[in-house]
Length: 248
Image (cartoon, rainbow, N blue to C red; front, top):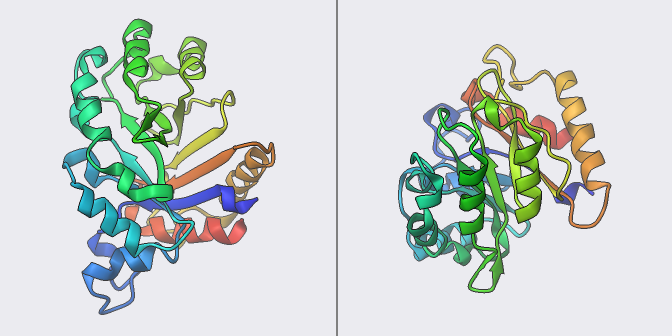
């Protein structure tokens, strides 16, 4: 069951993780190799800010073990705009940038909206219509990261169900927690890690999240859960993810 639950952090290059999560003296060019053997997924933040080429995705694929998965944040050019319906060119550019080089290590694609972007049913539906179901024969799974409370509505969930997408469920002081049980993919971003807790989250507080992830995938079929420890006290994120993996 736990092989359908993926747990990780955002990115793998972060100075406070050196001599902390990463062993002292580990070369920076081996950090992905190390992280991917102690976690089961990484949400790539770099793709949100920069455009990468196929050889880079192939390199990530080759440096990581079987069963490891990358979630990719789509480039901000695609979503940081007033009208999402105008994102077609950017969506095509991102999905055709070589992400298929990841092969079976390609996880969900996250489309992060601006915090000020309010729910507009027609605009969101137009955006969902632009998202390709596959690229070069490889199926794609899409996750919308809605950061405005106006998205916490049944109409939004109806649209996600119609187009086979899901939404981020955030454990956060800043962003809405929007539960969505209508699809097979659960995507959690746990964002309350505390600096004074060695594991970021107290282990007792992680137990309900672990139980929820297990219950989710126990429904069978293609149910999967992705759990990422992001933001908050980021220096504690790897320890929190490892604590979650231990519970699972």
